[in-house]
Length: 307
Image 1 (cartoon, rainbow, N blue to C red):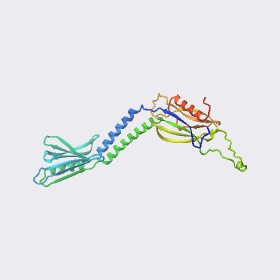
Image 2: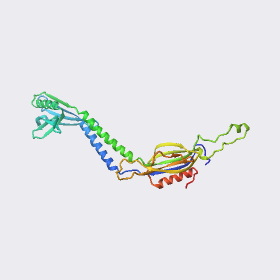
Image 3: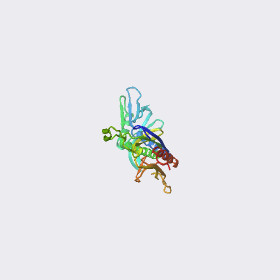
Image 4: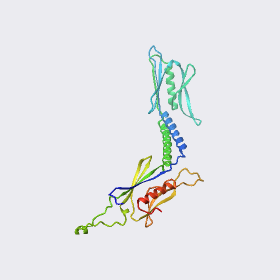
């Protein structure tokens, strides 16, 4: 146990602990819902434009463009002469008219919707398209229909909430995943010192230590797949008498009414006064052998009874 300051005394692997993966279908469902909602939000945030030109002596042409954030613009060109007429259509929601749009009908009777917006604006757009179709050479037309930003924001908000729920479930299920690396080290702040009286007489005397454990610290590193995530340190009490396994219930948000909460455990250092110093901050799910193996190894490193 005679070590230099900060020198490693022992390294103990505590784990691995069990992850909870029965909620994978729920996470996948929320992830799919998030993708759908964000896709709908992007679709609702598109700006639609219609540009038509009738050069003198030439065939009138039109181009529709759909511009959405994060996506390439989509465009389509067609001859205005192929459009037989433009019609207005109402948009209904729960039996009430909430908006309108224009329908372009070609010579074959096929219909193409354009420019869903308010009733007033959709009627005005339809009238402008009708005037262009009946116009003369040199006429032009440009219609821009802006998206409903509040609707896109509302849909995106639900998508973000679904994503947040998926992340929360993943974090909860992976709460016990991984393990801990416990390093027992000599505490550099607790070193033997030489008394002034002894120095005055020329006799060097090291202060007696009640226990070698007075100079030990534990450096505990949480690891997942070998990647260190969190580190904390604690001093080993000089009056520690044993290493125990504290047991209790582990929180689980997805228990059925007839299901018992899962059990977990963690290592604690028990002192002569009965105080308990947890080695890790939370109870972890794992087999009894996982906790017992780490308990025996830590007790051996601290020079304690392994009974």
